[in-house]
Image (spheres, rainbow, N blue to C red):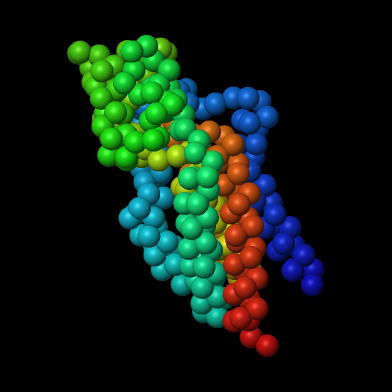
Length: 256
């Protein structure tokens, strides 16, 4: 009974850790974009990390995690965890898709481009266009502000350094901001899996998974793809989805 209480406290601590950075940024009215030099090695690593939550690589991320965890926890726990992870991720994907269309919030990078003098991106009409047209407008804006001697240097206000790879990411990701699909994916996976990892004592794998999940939300803000409230709300939604999914699977599959 004592272990059960400690397990739930540990799960709550994990959730609070995931909440910490976006909560502080929101309370302090601070933004991480355009703070980072997006041509730096750190930015490149940030992009690689965020790619682990981008389709189709997100599926590979889940498969790798489940394959590794298969050797770390008892098989009955692994089977229930796998069922809970699949249920929670499918639920988070569906909810994320519906909420994006409902809230229709512009991304930070789109807001940034729209604020530039002579920008082809008009914030009031941008999201009324087809995705391919939005991508073309972002590509046009990036090309328009590229320095003639350095395509990674944008002559915006403030000036921005951004690698061609991350520029292409901006061109590809032209949907709404709220909530953060990458964050809700990562946080749902972390919280759902953590219940079983804590239950089985696989603390090393749990810590690695937690660090990855916390870094995912951070990466989305650094790359200009999401506001702090997007990441914060996604982390809260993920907690609800995880608790419901775990409860359903435990009720169905838990041995009597």
